[in-house]
Image (cartoon, rainbow, N blue to C red; front, side, top):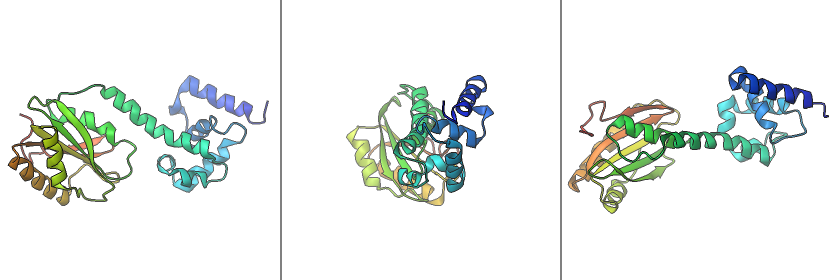
Length: 227
């Protein structure tokens, strides 16, 4: 038995008996690292990771090269750390299931919010709907824009026409902000509404997501969407 085996078994037993809520961030990360670093003191490595990235969220948001730059963190440990938020995203998506038809902005938000989990850059999605508000497609329109939704209305209209959509819902995230539209968001929404209207397509909503919170322009009275 190694020198750290007793400590490892105690942490594992504590997790089995009391769950992760009984752990502070250091012990939780230490426990996770057991499964990628079998023969070292992961407490020291967990300390180094939290110090380097400023907390648990920073550790999970760090890149693979940033993680492996920390002494004691190899590729396997870095991959395991990056896997956690991605598996959480898969878990949340699985809870949404096969939702295909929407009757409200709240239902659309429930469907879309998991798609923004673990995203650290701005992501713009478009949901194309038929005349019964059933989903025709959900696709990425743009990625990586900071502080504004800067996408081509031409691309939006082309996608809506390709799928013969009757209505469109736009959604984007504010990774480091709050779920409130900026002036740029409102200006783009008006531009997109007009471009779609000329093609006989309804702009059903524009949803802004921040974490698990969302803002619906339709619900706010910005314009009418679902009837």
